[in-house]
Length: 228
Image (cartoon, rainbow, N blue to C red; front, top):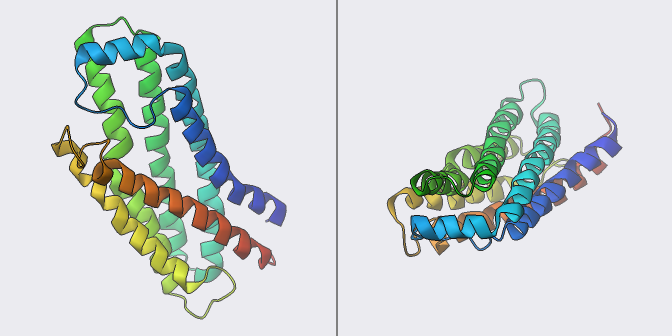
């Protein structure tokens, strides 16, 4: 595998994160809209921001494609550690691909909301809930992706030229941090809601940290990759 293409793959993590965040800003949905909003309030917001939400929808979906390339290059580097039985590498890749669904689907749902903002209020309200719950609630896929990374790294302590051992522990802690969004299905206000510190800000922060650390350490691993 050409190292230049691998480096591009590592940079795709940063590209994905920045496109995703740009989409949130363009759609005027960052910080997250509160689940306590009423149906008429949601409809008024969507009608006022319809064009921005359509652009947001497009950007979020594009970000998911870059995330897939990022997951692939992590898989390649984990395979270097694991040899000819790369269980952790392939599990990480499979879970990463599944996690892309939670980039693409919220983007589609936001686009559907903006496509007909004058639709029945109840229908729009249901799409609003679905878009945010799909974004924040399915923590398990991303958390297990990180867990597989961590286990793969820690299971091969003698391989020191790919990912450092601390990156393995880091991935496990990130997986634990993501679990806090389990609560968003049960609350519409306060710190446990999908816009609260426990429901959103903790998992969002740890995911952002994961992207940065894995981008940086993957670039470092690629420098030692002789292609064998």
